[in-house]
Image (cartoon, rainbow, N blue to C red; front, side, top):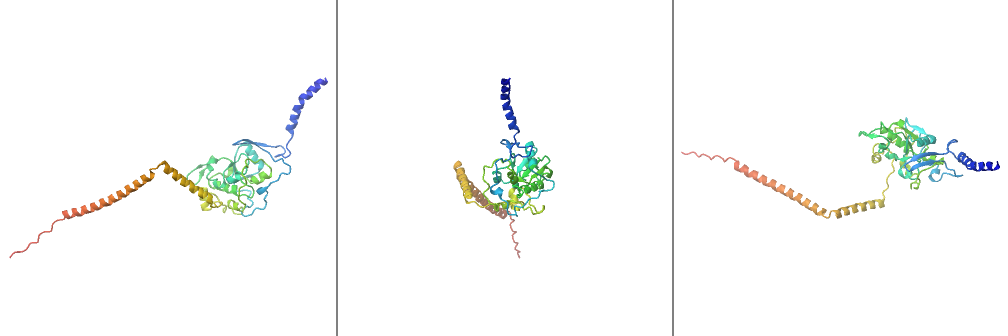
Length: 324
């Protein structure tokens, strides 16, 4: 009997240990009932959890609490009429179910520092240009046919960032239905504050100060009519000041490199067609000869016409002299 009990205990022990491990929740969960969420990404499934390191804190730019306002002012809860503002749990539900496209509307350099798993990058100045990625078709009248628009969720750096609100207003102005847009107002600031999993992050934080990035933010104190929207391309937006843009600083090294590329391309073309210069010279000479021949022919025609006029002119009648 004792042998039977011992054998039973040895068999049951691993199962009991496994069951105990399965019921153990992490110290920091997402909710009391939820410890993780798995989402599908272009690189495969990613499990979102919260940071478990004791005493973990935000560092660097994410720990800054006194950004200048303007331009880094607190954003309104509703970026545009008809747009729903959501929190982390609603966003996690959408990521898990896949019922919406999650859009990181920050510039690409910020996106490279890390983003929410499953998000795609559509920089806010290109939001209108890239509406085709969200189910819209251009109607060639400066608007879009968004009858089949996808459901989307936009976010940026957080409550002090105006990039996604600017993108949202631009999309609506271009014809995207407001009811298909949700706004995650907390953005990366709150996402990181909660210790939620970040995808990517291999790149360093953009090498610009918050003051330098001011040109890329929206002043939340402006009224809806005053808030800038993007119409057309990013270049047009920069020219018309339709959206906040960051001025380009001339880069001598980049300009020199571009000039070298042009020179190399010209040299390659010359090597590929060594008779190009001769052909151009022959073409120029032929054109000049034709011009000269045309002028000579025109002069000859004028002289011939004058000669013809002289031959066809009637002779004057002889004067009759009276006789006595």
